[in-house]
Length: 172
Image (cartoon, rainbow, N blue to C red):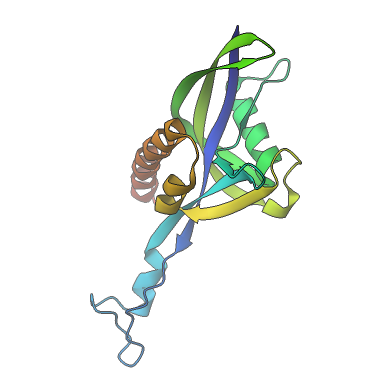
């Protein structure tokens, strides 16, 4: 039996602070001043987890009647994380199989890059009991499923291209 779902990599950009900053002269060891730090950002992504099973995953879920795959990704990310998100771009898909009630399912999950624009992780639904932000490299270490790690790497590439385009347009 074939099954489809959609989800995404929800990201936010946060200012990066340098522990090497020399406050006496106002520069860090690279010669950057305090104002330069406003332009250096790090990427964080949100993961959903189940503490009893020790699972960390990307938010995803199944379509409701009449929804487009993009609508599914946005809705599921919002429900599972408690965050308001904006769809940026398609990232890629993963496929896997599993057996439930003696039926083999072949599932395809389409992932999108989603920007967090509001909301609160404390407002997530009951499907997961943990919703946490992680720096990109830490999220890669935490994810339970290797195919989702690959999606995270693809999302990083898509995000970098999108940010370059936004900067050219003067929007970020």
